[in-house]
Image (cartoon, rainbow, N blue to C red; front, side, top):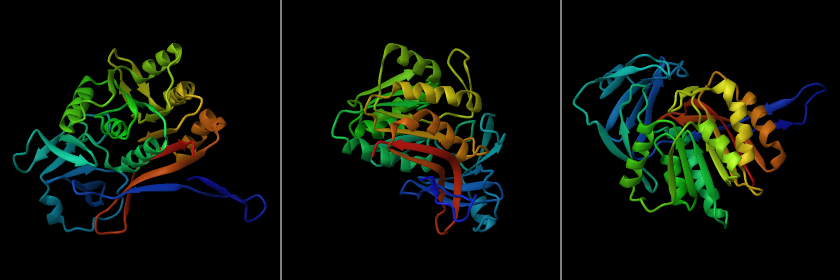
Length: 307
């Protein structure tokens, strides 16, 4: 949690921030990192992907890296297309799990595999808040991607609206729903531009108890709409504030534009949600490296909760 301590001397303030650390689990591990890359395990598949934040030297011998099943090459830009070099024949998709959810991993041209393991802190805390609310919870998941956050929230008891502009991502999310045996859970899958959908929901008078917001730096809607994080996030957060019920539960914002500052995200969220009272946390998400005390920063976050 971002805290402002009493000044130790006149004119001086001390600030601290939270680092939410996600350790691996049976189906995922950050094995090593360094020299601008990370070595990970997704089930039985090991991959090497670019990671600008890994400015240190790797711990493991080069032979471990060279033995990876797949290496992402080409563009290192989040929005640019690249390619995978496979060391052996690999399946087009393979099944993994987290908690009650099952999901498919796939190699994409944008270096992702369909899951962001560092967000497990958000998944766990949101599920805990939903279960402890003692009332029905409506949750809106904007930029919902392949749906793991939506599935875990619905399994915890929420009625979920999942919005993503990509037909492919929503189809993937529905595959994950079927794979998890969660077909009967109350999830609406919406293919739409997140900003336009949120604005329409405001006009319709729709309200939500919780919102999960995970925007990219850059994106396009199904009709060619353009999303630019630094330009559009303030407006989106304003819409989110208008969508909240009189007694909201939580709002979680994750920002992968790591070159920004968590202080800037904190100021923006406080501007839009500061009147709610409650508890604010701002900082970074990080992955714990297996077998060491190193943490790999991945993204910025801000969380508001009523408790």
